[in-house]
Structure formats: C-alpha cells, structure tokens
Image (cartoon, rainbow, N blue to C red; front, side, top):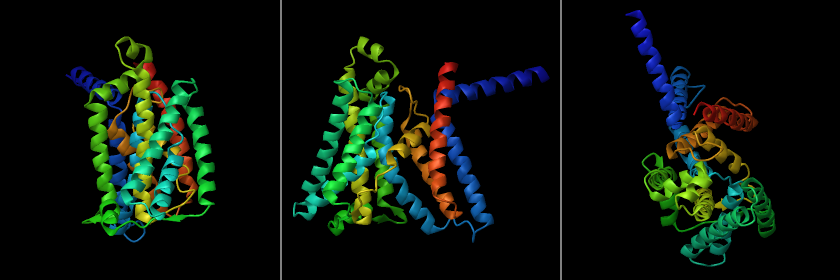
Length: 333
C-alpha cells in the first residue's frame, strides 16, 4: 500500500511537471496568485503600513498595467515568431508625439489617430524589411531603429513635452472610469481577448507558432514565412502605438523620454509569462500575467518605499533566469 501511494504521488508529480512544461503560463499563474495572497495578507495584517488593498492603490495599479500589457501582447506574438523588437518603447513615444502634433495643428482627431497608427505600421514594416530582406538580426535592426526614433523624437519635440487634450467623449472612452475600473484596463482585457483569438484560435496564430518553432519546417508545409514575420513586426509596432495613444490620453501630454525602458520590460513580461526566447512557444495569458506581475512588484516597491532602481534589477534578473529556464525546458523535451 505504501509503495502504491508513493508511486501514485510520483505519477501526480510527473503529471504536474509535464503540464507545466506543456503550458508554461501555469507557472506564472501560480506565482502571480501566490504573490497576490501574500500581498493581501500583508495588507490585512498591516493596513496602515502596507495599503495594497486600498481603493486608490488598486485603481493606480489597474491604470498602470495596460501601458506595458498592450505592448507585451505585440512583442510576445513577435517573440513566438522567433524575433525581437527593441523599438517598441521609441514607437510608443514617437507615434504619440505625431498624434499630439497633428491634432494640435488643427487636424480632426481621427486623422491624428490614423497618423499615429500609420507611423507605427511604417516602423514595423521597416523593421521587418531590415530583418527579412537584408538578413540583419532583429536585435540589431530594432536597436538601430530605436536609437534613430529617439533622436527624431528629441528633434521634433525640441526635448519638450507636448500637450494633448482631445474631446471629453474621447477622453472618457479611452481613459475614463467604469465604476472603480479604469477604461484603459478594460481596453487591455479587450486586446488580450483579441490577441488570444488571433494567436491561439486562428490560422495566423498557427503560422506564427510554426515559423517560430522551425522556419524550414514551416516553409516545407507552405507557410510564407517572410509574410508572417513581417505581419508580426507590424503588429508589434501597432501595439506600442496603441499603448502610447492610451497613455498620452490619460495624462494629456507626451514626454520625449516617456517610453524609455518599456522595450526591456515588455520582453521581461513575455519571458516571465513563458514565451520562449528561441520562438515557437508562448501564450497570451502568460504575456498578460507577466506584465501584471512586473507592475505588482513595482507597486510593492512603492508601497514599501524601496528605491525605484530595484525594479530594474528585478527585470534584469528575470531575463537571465528566464533564459536559463528556457534552455532547461528545451533539454527536457
């Protein structure tokens, strides 16, 4: 009986390990839930010193997560396709600046929004061409794009913030409040559902996984690899632009330095969520939870008055640990 019970326990353990390898987002889900339980318990035990459950803190957290979460969705899909995009932080700022300047010049709001999205599509297209046509690694190509865009932003803005004050209706739609839930968080949930349907319930998603898993195998079954990757690059840029539009609308201004660091945080959010650095593996749920976990850690640091650079250290550590775990998972398969 003891041997049988021990064998059953081993079987359950092996089954759990297999499930975690098959669905990497389960790891981050368990970590996220555990962290929430700890934070809630600490808030109940120390309500005056750790105000995690206070309404202002919850609202602030729900407003902050969409900025990174929407970017992480696009970056994550591109990573599943086997590529990286370091330009999303610059696109976040550049497209928002174009929108603000076009609108402030007297153009209708739809034209300003269209200009922001068009700029993002153009940047994504250029990134894709550099990688696919000229065989430059995506890391180097998008690093160059990022630096060029940052210089252009500083030149156009003269290193000054630009205001953006759209109509009250648009302000309420994008950055208003539905009960105690900020509108931008609802937008994040909507984009997460759309990304899930695209990546995990659509033929395009199957092709994304195929080209990220094995370019040669995808070519062999008739997948047009370059077209799929080009679309993923453009999707990554558009997600950054949408995040920039929402963020700029919320604060009514765009700063030339506001997007710096978002590219590394987005990659960290994805690898935390189980997206493989080598491509071919990942889930939308993991991308969403990865972004939520990063901002939860940032919130904890703020509530405990810890230095802000601790978050940068955390993000760097996570990227290194995720790379090690990715290699370990690949060896187990």
